[in-house]
Amino acid sequence: MPLYYDKIVDSDCRICIWEIAETKEELLTASHISEDELKEVENKTVKRQLEWITIRLLLKNLLKTSEKILLYYDAYGKPHLNGVEKHISISHTKQFVAVIVNDNKKVGLDIEITAPRIEKIKHKFLSKKENDWAKGNDSLEKLFIIWGAKESAFKIYAEGGIEFKEMLEVKPFDYSEKGETFVTLKKNIITCAYPVWWEKIGELMMVYALES
Image (cartoon, rainbow, N blue to C red):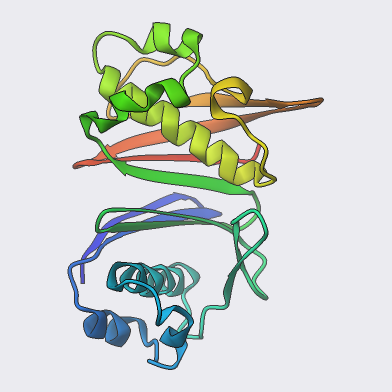
């Protein structure tokens, strides 16, 4: 089974990424999920069903349980575990699904396949200041880190009404395959600064942030 990536961040936090290469039946067997449980997404596309199963497979792995995963999403789309006092965040792109679990702090996670397409939408999330320092060498990777940092902060805050370009600012950084920075959120009288880490894993850029 292709567990693509497994990182113990610290004693309270762990990240797993799965590359979906199995059929639905193979994933159901591996995750011990019944067809009855799958009725929740029976009207969804096959891709969405595969992601749904994989999320639960990863959570069972991270929580070290074989019990049914009771996962629900609040009004802002933030995932929660029913009856489990842990914080989680979920991301997926193409055939990859990623989950982060933290025992004590709110978390945000984003994975993206690095490709030039992001250049076409950078005006939607990049401030003028960020655009200036992100130019030059490794600009593509920097764009994905900035996007991932803002997406992760958005997932931590999880109350909506966030304008990525105006309300979120990423501290300048030099690119390497692993690194860290900060993202600041400013909304009305609220100001939060979240530490951010990134890692280039094959074709993926993984970015995650923790509640400060």
